[in-house]
Length: 311
Image (cartoon, rainbow, N blue to C red; front, side, top):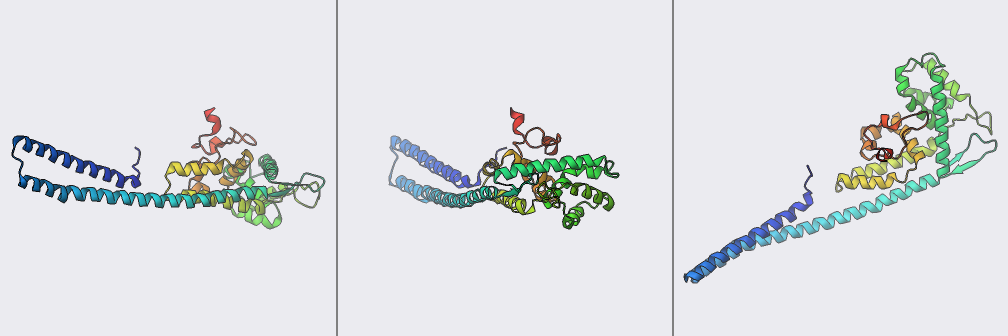
């Protein structure tokens, strides 16, 4: 059932009151026409007619006018709110683009130190995430205690992303492990050592998976706050909110949405799931049917209407 727009209620009431007032005038006019045709119209009848018009119909039209003035004021107030909202919203979109364009990434698989920026950095980070996920999956059957650990299997995306985000330095091992208390420490240590074995091409003393917290931490905080800003706007309906977030979503290319998929399924993305933003605003709608090692986004977010489903 379609909900009535509360802001239109004063206008509806004003229209109904006006129609009621016109009906009274029309009905009295018919009565006066009848009395006139019968020759019984007199001064007393005219006085009563005038009293009814002035005492009943006049206030009805006055109330209708007040309601219309109120509706006009509320409309102007909402228009001002929307204008203020859009000014901030498009400013946030601008900051999002700047966050991407200012992103820098030192490629770990080049012999020489080569830095990429902007969307190219996003692409290379996504490639590294895929490499890390491949390595984690291969270790399941190699490390005793992992292949039969169903909880770990369900969370392999989350563990991959945390290693990708924080990096696999010894300083960050405790941070990542704290999110998975169900995994035995020795088993986790073995996993960590395997991932740390890979080094960068330009320096054999630097781990390949060095982490992206300083790149993606602010990026995702800003992205989350932008969606939350739209979702919390009380003067917007659901359709309007979706359209605004859609404007933000189209800023994300496939690589960004892939990174976001992993982020949203990790402990760092719990607020995305808690508030239902991913499903409500279809934030990974443009992902293909599978990413990486046949990860199917539809199985992870079955409520999303993916773009490929409508083709």
